[in-house]
Length: 129
Image 1 (cartoon, rainbow, N blue to C red):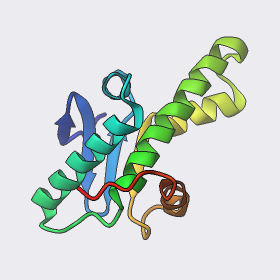
Image 2: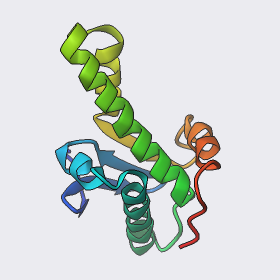
Image 3: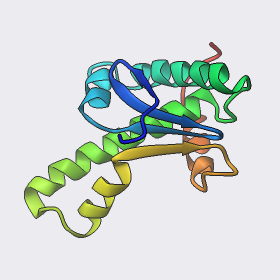
Image 4: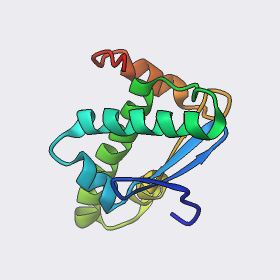
């Protein structure tokens, strides 16, 4: 990621007001590998803490919603990479790979998809830490 300004377990992240961008590269996949959603929750907690340190306020995205968005982007990217081997990089596969390269996680005012991650996160075990 060109404008990375934070790293957690070698996962490149850019933190700006109301937006956290996570590079979906090998480091993120390695961090999630074997621990899945639990690792995504750990990353979400760390991103919230770093956001609070930088801006002296809370990121207005629940930890579970942020974890869900990160985890699901990586999952969809893995599926697209598998399909790429069969169909090549064209059409929907190409669009999905481009869209999942950097995971843009914004507060509701910045992210028109926030409602989807908020909805999906209600099915997760609550993370009150």
